[in-house]
Image (cartoon, rainbow, N blue to C red; front, side):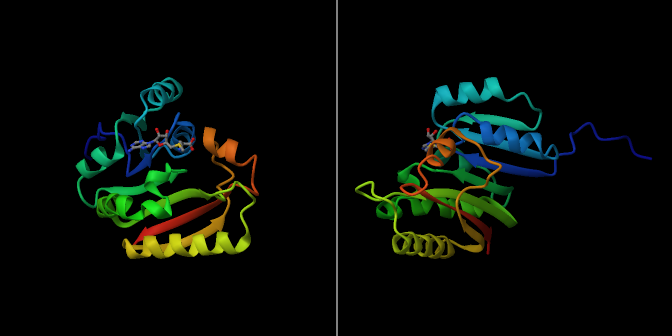
Length: 189
Ligand SMILES: C[S@@+](CC[C@H](N)C(=O)[O-])C[C@H]1O[C@@H](n2cnc3c(N)ncnc32)[C@H](O)[C@@H]1O
């Protein structure tokens, strides 16, 4: 009989982009010890908070820009990416031409099948409640955009996953008419 491996039995790798203070990363890693979770965050203070918070063998914090770090992963090496409330420069409709290349690169890093969960929000420019028509148009645009980047939409629903708690999510949930969120589960097509 062969010796048991000294390598931990992690079978999957999931990367969170812009993880803030690491609350979601910690909760996910705690509930899923077979998976390695890597959180990437630009802000040093947020990374320090995440490192103080997370004491798990299967969760790692990388400080830096995901634009620089994600291209360094080998192609088809990552099981999943998560982005919770990315900054407008990575999801705003008017900035699409700027951010498209990043998600295209990210898609190449996913295994087949690999998943990308994005939680994002729409607000009205005048900070009025977001009407249903505007919400629907925006949701369709999001789905079409990610389809054109090589993803299939596996699921799409209004709101954010109830089991996730983060600084921004908790704040946005306090104003659900003016900040409407959507959760999209994408798979590499
Ligand atoms: C709106 S906050 C959301 C933070 C966290 N996901 C949450 O839900 O509380 C966006 C985060 O993305 C980080 N960020 C922005 N651009 C980034 C980049 N290029 N690379 C890594 N992190 C980035 C910001 O520092 C910030 O913490």
